[in-house]
Length: 240
Length: 240
Image 1 (cartoon, helix red, strand yellow):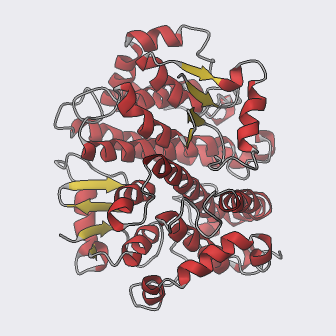
Image 2 (cartoon, helix red, strand yellow; image 1 turned 45 degrees about the vertical axis):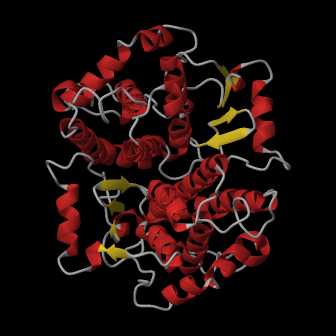
């Protein structure tokens, strides 16, 4: 049975981290909310008064009766089934820990354009967004990216994959955040390749995987846009 | 061998969610950073140039050679060993999903006092903190708490535990966020018990568990303070 991915239509958002894993593995899946009447199907699960295990928010994955919520949890669940998780059980916790650091980073990316309230428009918190984005680009991006560089450098199996000796869902997620950063902050990321060469190399290597290359060229890959996590607001960007 | 919990000394913070599970189970553990020279031991792991699996930040758990990072990941790892996880494998993913929602909530609690930048003092972002806190109390607390109420109400095994038919680490974490909310926002939480009766009942039931009752009365339970996640700044509180 095909996996059902439930996520908002019209944006990459957090759903994209799951899509990349499903696409890389060539797995059968239905992107439910993008099908006819699909958002209703998703909302029906979210608002269900009888479903035993309701998610707080999209994305969530349905595999038969089981509903798995949260990106990192979905990847923890799918990873072994898709051949995108380490074989060693201990390393699976290590991979999940790095994925949760990526999740925290994604939240901080979101908060660059919504620092005061998710229920206010960006336009109504633009001044605060400028302050938050400056701190994000000056302090947080280097803190996270230098950490990912160290994870690669200190991987006993070599720096061409984040965890262990095979490409995992963590590498696919690294691709996505690097791609997103370049979309949102093209000026600030100009020196990214020389500042974070190992992380940049993961991005490029993932993009050369045949199924990922085919996916990003397809209609299934929604372009980055200003409804997603990574938004290009030129007034928030700054020189590297 | 005793578990090693590595977390900042002097605050409950995110480490407290792990402490509650270890304490409830009566597990042997060392709160490393609270021992003599312990913060150095923690920093040595964080700054190691040779360790294969470095965490991004505390808390992390050392179990022999394995290092597990992030609260939810640590609880995922410890839960089955401590008898605080569902037996059913599918339910473990459900529990982990709810725990990750709690983690997101904790991040939003933190951002009430640090909306603009973690590297700025609270005093330097107080106006933004007031706006963010208002949105948090008016919109986000109800959204999360009503969700947790629904999780309880729709649990096929009854509303006296969050997941399945036994108390899990998720219940212990619900205790902690309810306790923290009451510390940080005593005025805004005045009607909590009538607004969210099932969630409030979980808090009270957890507090009556013998090992938790003994723990919160002990020196090991650091009082809430303004270095932690839940901070009582009267100017941010508001009437219910």
